[in-house]
Length: 402
Ligand SMILES: Cc1cc2nc3c(=O)[nH]c(=O)nc-3n(C[C@H](O)[C@H](O)[C@H](O)COP(=O)(O)O)c2cc1C
Image 1 (cartoon, rainbow, N blue to C red):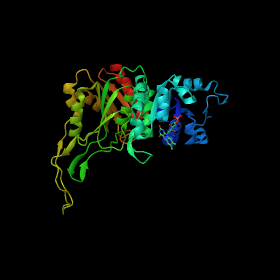
Image 2: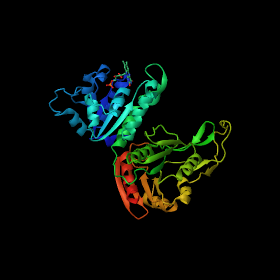
Image 3: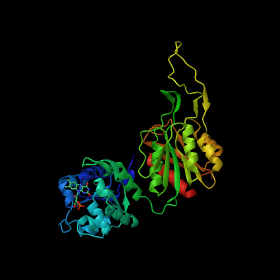
Image 4: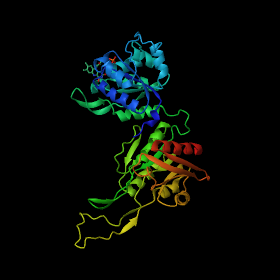
């Protein structure tokens, strides 16, 4: 998943005295790889778990711990850090620091910076499950949520104490997703609306070990989901089999066959404001699925009888109502003509056409090159861009219609 949207953004990473503090190093490194500008504020106790030399080297910046540290370029540190951070993310957030912020206590550089924050604040907690379930911790979390502080995790899993439960720091990608979403535009017309996005291929089984499919990886659909979440939408991704990870915050519905995908779309459609068909569902399936593995024939060949699968977007058209429907047309010839034909036949508002024979575009690539055609006759060419940038262009068009 791409985090290029973090490039040039200003992030403060707070680190607390948790056994999971070392994972903050990975978050800082990934933020720097995404070209974000990072400042790190460890608590005094965090420095018992991660060395300042590591935090300095990873962030490429001086690191202050104490409020009264003398670092000349940071005039009044807590204010300059609070001003600097478009987002402050606390990895790993301890029960202690969560409790202090909830109580309005500012007795170190991190809690004081948070209290003066100009941007959004995200806590990624990590602690023993009893600490997490402690009603005082839960009350503190609720208090902070009530003031619009955000939480990512904790997950359920193996904890450093050897026990299993809720309290494990969530994955680095989840934290980057939460930052990406916190940095999204506040004024999107789509905020609070619901998107259904289909992604990936489907599989149509011949027998228990073979299927018909296509090389779709779902990268385009998942990039659309990231963008929808960044614009504050509620997102359901209905995905065929793929190795892509659903972005944090999306509801993931897995669908194997085209029929499964159709059923999932029909189930979610009533609640949706936007439907984007970015999946590549198989258009045909074997007429029958053999119960046992088909054996090689002595002649070496076999004729398959295929039947058509249902058309997902065309069937959603029946109940379209106020919803914005967007389709994708992956074509190998007559791109514009075929795309406009689909726009009409499926009653779409927008169609995103891409030539799958172009280099670095379409199936599996990290980039795409598309033209977005609107029902109103508008056409928007989007030259070769990352799939996230293509997703931004698609959502700019959706915003225009919303
Ligand atoms: C080995 C060790 C691991 C700890 N891990 C955690 C943890 O994961 N989460 C937590 O809330 N507290 C943890 N603590 C307790 C905190 O370090 C302690 O509450 C401390 O006051 C937190 O300070 P801070 O919030 O200023 O960083 C741990 C303590 C020790 C000694």
